[in-house]
Image (cartoon, rainbow, N blue to C red; front, side, top):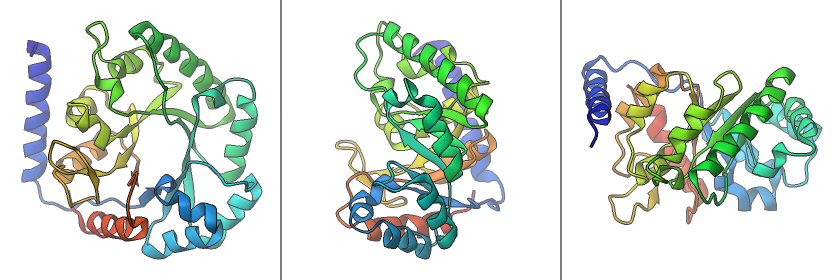
Length: 273
């Protein structure tokens, strides 16, 4: 480990311990759900599924598709259920031709962020630099319209290419005026990195997180929040202080999605940091 990285990790651990030593008074004010978790239910009954999510106690949702509904229909349903949707996931190709239309629909629904869900397969580190250029352009267009552009990671961004981590390249090569990040806390930990280090090094850049837990490695199976090995008190406390604004529960492949999101909500509702 390089001395610089060791110092960053040491700083993250010290901050983690200082957070743990404080009076635990803070909590997540508005717990969100990434709706990919209940995608099968949404496809079967869009309206009833959103109502059920709201009944559990969630107040924010992040979309990953609208299942044929118009922006106006989605906005009306959000109002009826008392939900807000600050964010939505979009594919990488959405930031090409027609990007302005995507932004217009997002604003009509009430989104404040549009998030590229994945960069797909990228062959080399220069490919990530080219993607960063695309993100800067897309983010500038979005900002002029009144919306923020963000990127969501998996674990591949933490596998070194030519001695560099792609996630680090994306952070360094994107303009903070135009591009922020949604950190998937499960995937960064599975990729062998410490979220606390990134919160400390890049305050304000990571404005949203995906909250999903993991059983001990291997196999890093995703599990309900609070049922795995991740230290949520330290991570969420540090993230909040570093500028994270939105917290979306996600369970990629739950056998019973509603039981999973209910258990995760209950854990986060009671968590203090």
